[in-house]
Image 1: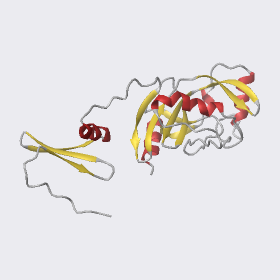
Image 2 (image 1 turned 30 degrees about the vertical axis):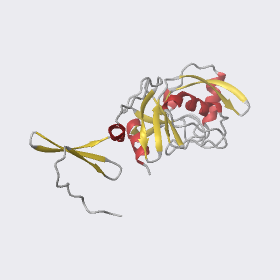
Image 3 (image 1 turned 120 degrees about the vertical axis):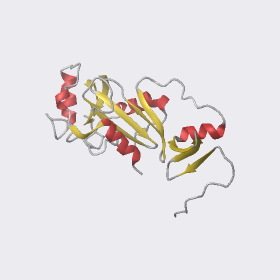
Image 4 (image 1 turned 135 degrees about the horizontal axis):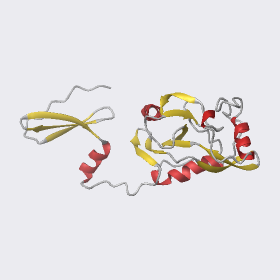
Length: 220
């Protein structure tokens, strides 16, 4: 359904707010000129509520958060570290690279970075784990518990992924040495008691991590 473009009211007003398709446009006069600029939903909400919005102290590793049509979302990027995982019925300690965890509404995605620090322009790599779709990084939770899209629960949600058993689902095309099943690489790293994940094993994507996240956030 489309509507005709509304005309400004024939009254004196300081500013006007236009509700567009998923965006908000603020129009006002300044120094005899008409100025238009897009504003964020949080700014609009704060103006109507008459109060400030404060996220509070964000957990370490949360690099971005917001809301879209699917609900709240956050991006969490913990550094490379050692984690415990379940390979079948065996608990193994392995090194993992820096990861990027995106939760938006009821969906979650996981990617990897080769760098030590998060940066939107860093190249995106496939998460070297099973249970993650190779095309868009979406985590397949099965019957396992899903994370909530709340920034203050980012670490807990990320941990849920590693606490669930790793099966054969989406285990292929995740590393260089064992393209058929990345669990073989993870098992080897555990047996050798490696302390750092071999970055050369990562499979590169065509986009930067920033481009990948932006595309996922724009999906309907």
